[in-house]
Amino acid sequence: MFYMLTKRVIGPVARAVYRPEVSGAEQVPAEGPVIFAVNHLSVADSFVVPLVVPRPVAFLAKAEYFGGRGLKARLVGAAFGALGAIPVQRGRGRAAREALEAAERVLAEGGAFGIHPEGTRSPDGRLYRGRTGVARLALSGRATVVPVALSGTDRLLPKGARFPRLTRVSVRFGEPLDFSRYQGMEASLPVLRSITDEIMYAISELSDQEYVDRYQSPSAEAA
Image (tube, rainbow, N blue to C red; front, side):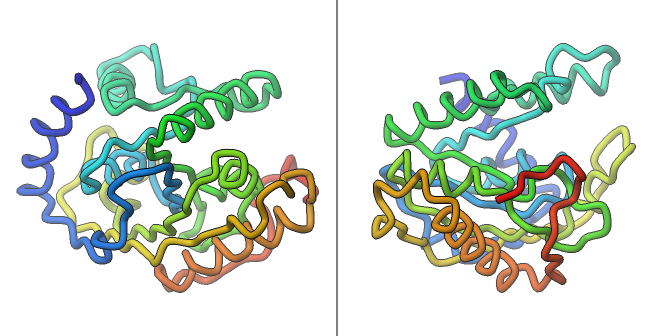
């Protein structure tokens, strides 16, 4: 209830001020489990998608965004909480597992979940190799995957900026991807890699970003 109240209050104001360019929204499934696989340019990404999608969308968010000190930290934490974000402790295996279990519950209830397959924000605007968690979640949650390409969010809220800037952003939704043909193959790394690469290719086609076939950090998974 608080999510929808926040969305109905903030959404129209944000759309009126920033006038986001949205395309392909008619392709978003109106019901059933769905994963929005989104490129990652800014902290603002996790706010933009829920505000332009008619149905509630839950995202994972770094635990550091919740309970921070200072006005900006508190505003960000409150905003993430209001939009149903799921906190995750990066670098802690059990905490990450618990966050994914929470995501699976969202999908099991027929909800929508947003994820950034790259894992963290792009440092240079290019699109990096996706991590296979999105594929595992798509299979375990029996969910349709909708690729989403954002642009302009890195200008809306650049790293280190205290408050959003007045600039246009673009949100492009791609054709839903069905991976039911791989059902029951969650343990196969080649299958997970193939699904993830298909998702990343769809995002790159929408975003026109240069694709980099490597992970962003040394601690990336080996799959």
